[in-house]
Image (tube, rainbow, N blue to C red; front, side, top):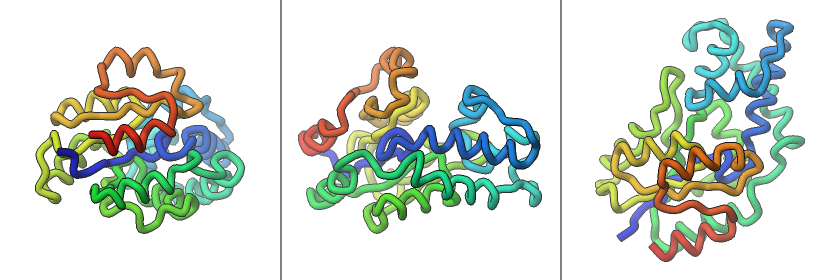
Length: 217
């Protein structure tokens, strides 16, 4: 019996990956005069905000000089233009999942620097019972899934994760958790083959199909 649903943010609840890429590109350009291409930026995804920024700047993520505040300012400035709203019906979907008696959490590679501003901007405050956020050293989503299972006293079959990336699928499977592969973002086509090859339990191309599937499990 399903008891909890954990959601990714970027590419899952909002089409925010273009925002993330452009915010890193502009921040690095402002700091160094060099504008990294999207491929370079994406190569660091899976790491947290500080991890990606440090990689692009050739710095350590715990360096006090890391311009994380500058990055956040760029991210928040671009948010209204590049990611003005979540996927239509996302807030109502989260509310319906909670109303059905399921526990709801967010597991994202983001740190609080960008996760919380997006949650607030999208009107999702109060909808997540628990946040499992990223680390600058490695992709820690499998650890976060284990953490929430221990915290909530759940077995792997009692929760499901909703995420868009190939790494989401492999990390879920590494801890025995099912995944709904989110394939509705503008960026989903590029990773379609990689995601399909990893055999997610479910793969949805339309956001509106998500809530009926969750409620059927």
